[in-house]
Length: 393
Image 1: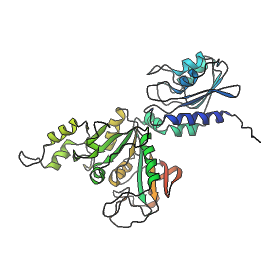
Image 2: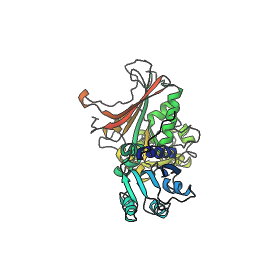
Image 3: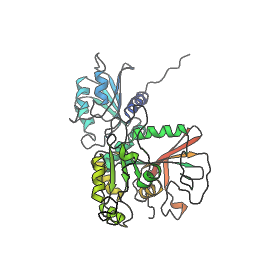
Image 4: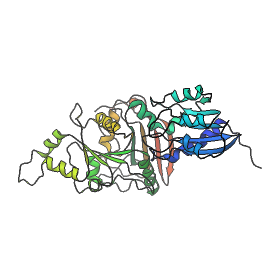
């Protein structure tokens, strides 16, 4: 016997959220948005924001229906836009199609919208109800909300470790900590985030590609923190820079000091020669000042620069030193910790977060909104970093 499903606003909003997720990896720095149109209790049109620069979810949905939509109800997880950008405002077509009522998941933090879309609809006689599955709608677009509200990229720290907290053996061997299913999910994360960041230590030790190997996926912008400009011309990162956008963050003074001011004829290329060779290969060099203590690049300034270039999110695959620096500066928002049921031991084996550490367990960085997933024999614990973060240097 078929059970009747109560078609509440939440029922339709869940469909809109499922549609929105189909835009993952394709719409950044725009949000993921889905839209459902119902009339007489039946869904008559659906749509989602399919790609950056393309029509928004509401316009796609309304254009997908050829019949009259007068008196219909529209469900969308984010407030309809009301300004001209790459596409016309969605409020215009909603009014034009004589939609009776619009159900909105959450307001748009973009100052160009921020409640104005709802106000315009109401001024034209459209009923509006907000806050339908608001937390779920905000959660789907946590990157967009952080980017809009903080003008900084959303940073998600990802690492894989053994059950005793090691990311590699004492020998340096790290292939592989986790199994194939967990590593396949990492490709989904690389598709989800606009950029991927690693430190030069990871590049020198592993010679990674840091690309997305998901079928139909999009390669993230690769950002390498390399204050001394040590990255080898023969590395996979540099060799594939013509195909995948690659940024190397460096500091000229640190690079000069490390090279010891090489003299002509000593066999070492000058700093200028190295920089020019990287540039010819397509690598973008981004000069970043050092932190006050002079040990590391100023990560806050680096993230500000990336945000100014439309990079709204970073998957941090940086190794223990870079992870510790991000946490110390309060710049990370989420953690993905993949845990393999293995023990490798070793007092000197690398851990996912290094640095000086926190002296008291009571002051440990905590996670909230925790989710646990299983991939083969491995677990993934993810959650938002909560509270004020203050790690010693």
